Image (cartoon, rainbow, N blue to C red; front, side, top):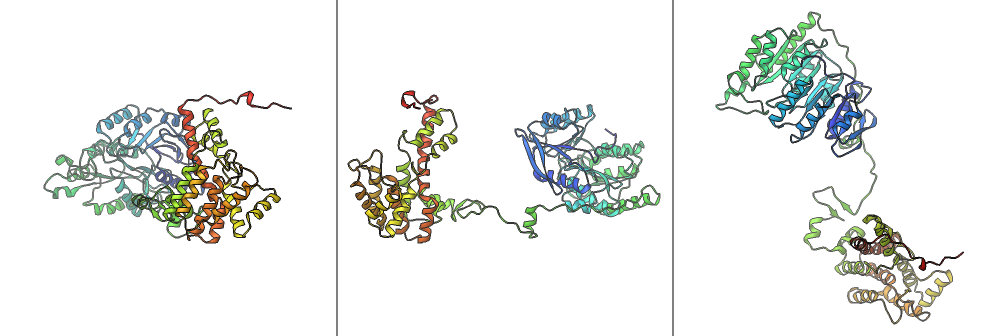
Length: 608
């Protein structure tokens, strides 16, 4: 492996398995370091393509999303780092696919628990092809002032405190990602900071070893000293011992192997990492620390003394003139995300939508303040749900039952009415359910199914002003307006609409008052004296009876009733009900596999 520097200020990476926070942290680090280009060139999300919006400083940018590793590498040939956030189940396969791409030089595997056989195969391939693996079970690595992997070094506050926004003189390598964050802080307190830090990961078989990176650090001129944090278990540290003895490492090394407390336990102890388990005396922390000391590394007497040992070594390099003072720079301010600023109370922002009928923020959705579980447990029906979502209150049972009757009676009126006809033609054209449904719904209006609101408005106005049926009808006639809710193409005095009769029967038996319905019946009596088909139709029946429901329930003010009629609530009932039938017609045509509809010539009058 050896060679030298892995990263630079121009390094770009491909990020596998989209995770918003670590990518944003990488971009914030880029901005902090004064990079001109984002370090994340592209995102790979299997099965997805497009863009993800993130921030690069104050600027919002769109990072391309690719469905496959090969496509991402082809689109971003200068990206030579592959950051793999896949789970342990798929990390090996995706990492191998990345290693096989000629543009990829470094693969960081974040997941822990990758099967050891798979890891060995990855290591063998990487070594044979002169590529570098960091991990598995790693937080990644960082080159100060240049590039960092994922969540390395944690929050922006910690990065600033550790002075990672500009390069120092110390190379650091550890097995532990968490302890790396701690050590970056320690090193920054007593030296000019790190130049590069790597966490190789805590699995039994790391993709690259402690000594791999230390030998590499030895070839980087900017690194003047090396700090190593090992742990009990495995024999990785002994390769460093041999390198020190053979003179392959010429820079000062300060080392500590954690886990000296293991001897206090009567039986073998497994620490946090899979590899942190002593398999014999040679793998103990004490044996490793002694071997490193004998080989020439500076090894303190305890972890607590590590900071002083680092400081002494660095101060000596300064005295010898091997380390030049670094000019401190003030990093730019990272703009705070609106969500975190709101949460901390620093800013306030207006909302863009107001909702008073439902709330999905708690453990379960609520309709007008009623939890979903209560709706089910109390046996609420569709009418009850409509009363909550439309009227924001629980209406009496006779009211919700009336709503349900209206829905059932208006669900369909055969295939020949305009709405059903449109839906059938659209379905037979091969269109999807939503398109077929909407084509039928778009016919609803003043001439088809949309007269309920108008019927309610005119009946209410006339009744409230105590107009006689004669005054009402003749007044409408003078204005050139047909009376909404009166008249039918098929039904007549001797062939009444059964739906109207059912609604009237229910209302007379259950409503406290049917004042508006009775007024509508009086109007019908007058209009029938003019023509046999000027009967009260279902629109007029529903419109007048809904006025009785609103007024008679005692749960609505006059202003609320006027608003409900004006907004169009009552036509909403017809739209909701007829959607059931239109969906049925769509399914019917598709089930019957009906061909494209063409209107017959003989049914068209061709004229000039």
